[in-house]
Amino acid sequence: MERHLMPRTSTDHPDHKRHTPFLSRPGVRRLIPFVLITAIALVFIFENRASTEIRLLIPKVTMPLWGALLIAWGLGMLACALSVRRRRDRHTKRRGG
Image (cartoon, rainbow, N blue to C red; front, top):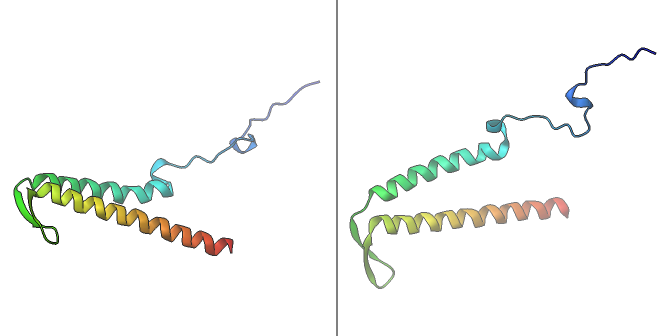
């Protein structure tokens, strides 16, 4: 009995996953602007090394400008992370309920 072997296509395999180019993935596409803005912000922060006087409500503090900018950047990133998490949780509750 003669056996004819047909070439297998990638869709014949049960563990087949469609190959998506790295830069076309949605997670990577959302991450690229974040990485670029972060890099630019960090360059800006560390280029400003002069000391400056900052008022924190009542006390005056003298510190390097890069430190103040880094603190402001970190607080902004924290606020962004919290708002994205809240928005995602709110959308999840709507779909589930």
